Image (cartoon, rainbow, N blue to C red):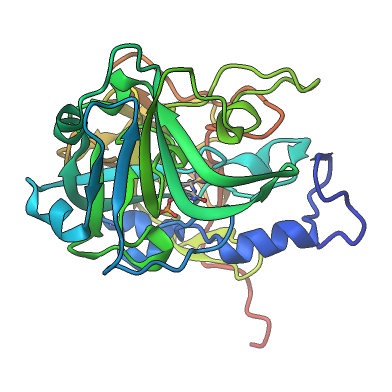
Length: 372
Ligand SMILES: Nc1nc2c(c(=O)[nH]1)N[C@H]1C(S)=C(S)[C@@H](COP(=O)(O)O)O[C@H]1N2
Ligand SMILES: [Mo]
């Protein structure tokens, strides 16, 4: 990729070159280096990051979570109040809905993810459902709106970052108000001091720097529901909302990389491939591997699950039939029968591109040294 000098600041582009604005976003919002798929729980600094606006300044001492709107008893809770409530720790795989966007052609100008916008955190917090029961949602509640403390301009609209769930979704028994990640207080970039965690849903649902929860009696029509996170058609017609994570499998890139192209080099002989697969719809029950670019598929072995809401490890013994170049792929199937597609359906803003990953690997003794 090169950096384009004169591409539009928004809209579609039909080029591999990224714009300066996309470079700015990509430098702020890093992915998880794929070799970190080795860790069942992603070390905090390796978890991917996506921040639409700026990381807001938060004061933990004066912080209060407000729960209001159409409730019988509005609540105002300090961090101590939240930490004094029952606590749950849950490993949760989180993935940005835009993961894979840069592999669509043409592609929407936005955060140009390849496939690395994922991570698994061990989130600790208090379950949301009992708190909503205490507040008492009034009859006619249509949505529960979660508002972050961050503010910005997007698509010409000045806004707080907001996402909503239906009352039934918000009452899900694994939805958490999390104050810790991997056993330590949330770092600023992951939502300090409090974030929503909705296991199984794409990243945008997990509102960081959570400041307010409001029960509303009309379906929520904020920017992140109407202008973002839908499968828009090419003509801009809004399609279905993007909700839960579609199945995806990724591989720890084997061998050693080329610095620029990331092409891999492995020595001759058997090579154990490994990776992780997840789905927000149902547990992963099958992973298949292809060593010929997606023509023939063979079963991978699944590791024991590390939790009901986390990715599943897998491995596969590859015995390369020949030296030279190979293309490795993997794909996931979940218990609801969702199969990861070889090529996912295109949509305008580049969501849920779960097309199988293709890793170019050269088997042999490596390229000739440049300076023998
Ligand atoms: N308040 C707020 N919450 C937010 C965002 C944001 O910009 N502001 N980004 C969302 C998106 S798009 C994603 S993918 C996840 C990323 O979470 P992480 O940075 O902790 O990995 O946070 C979500 N929650
Ligand atoms: Mo995202």
